[in-house]
Image 1 (tube, rainbow, N blue to C red):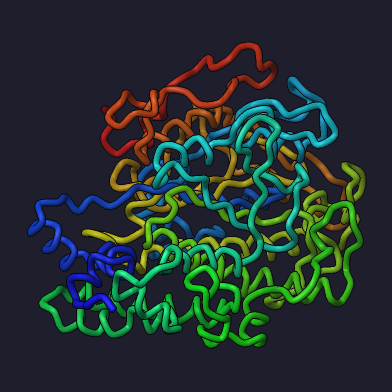
Image 2: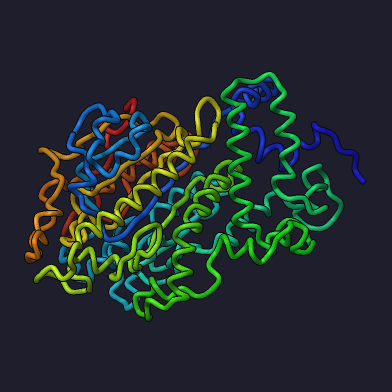
Length: 532
């Protein structure tokens, strides 16, 4: 057996991936002693939701300038008030490709395929995007070893264009991973022996003997707490232990042992009950736009996936970031599901409610009593989950700040308003500055004129007909936002470290034709904290 000591452990996987990155004062002391700068990685996280929202309830009434908690009163975003100084709300972006502009294909297919590619979609039956999506372009540059982005989802796994947002290349879908057990297995592999042979670090030695992730780090973190460190770092250790505990309790999966060692599932104390608590136990048909909905089994599994599953996926995102396994992450929610959890009891699925009719038809009479209140319930639920994610990142220290500070965590919607299917004036919020690159505590109007909140409640009052629920203006191509984010996380035009800043992304930025290319290159200087 190879002798083990604290120095060996700190050089091993456990110390490097779990301890040092998030203990600001201690990590800096070690880094300075070794002559190594303690720079934190920059990251992009995308929180994606379908079917738009009631935009007049989403947007704050203030249209530009410094953002304070009071400015969020009356908006869905009010729940983010305590973090107002870390929010950036850009108003006036438009996604491509718009329905009937350049292509006349289902507007949801276009909105999904073009969302992160800024390219047209295929005319083939799958209607996949014809270019690589933003997440893959960024991941190739900033991820360790250029690995693929971490794309997570809840609900049923799907390869339908109506649910797929990520594309690793032209017409090559990259579906979201909806199984938290799989994600955790991949993460625990980081702490494993990496193949046969004798263990070479204390981390390997402990994992090989079946101790849990919490057991692996608890004693060392307790020792760290005795070191001379700041009060903030003391709190960060407790936050980390709490996060590990929450995650392991929910995803104590028997299969994860195989990723760490060759031992049996019981080495991690896994039970069928623990696995069930974290993940659906059967098939989810609700969310499959071509299949049946509403079976009792499906409803129960969908509720598990959306409630425990969403929180678990968020915890796993944080763990991946802390261990620096991925710097480009997405959490993608499905669009064709019926909300029946957390006090919401709907009989119509989200997409139909967004149409105000309760089904796939467009226009005519509002077909669901109280439809606006139902949409508001869904919007509020998503806002709460975004707030949970942002607060989770902000609770975990890193360097002189938090995970949130070194990350741009963007809520990106499919549409603005689901009734109008409009792509202008998108409700977008970004929490965190990606290491100081982006402005914070501001609402920035990126287009000319005064941004509108939309007309989401201008119809369906008192059982009326569906009117124009969209808005005018707000047409700055979203390509420019993506360029800004690419620069924020450290991408370059030529893909080389220290290279020139990115100036363009996507195939085109017009509203009608892909042949014009990029007519308005460059980032949005008004979103940058210190433009250069």
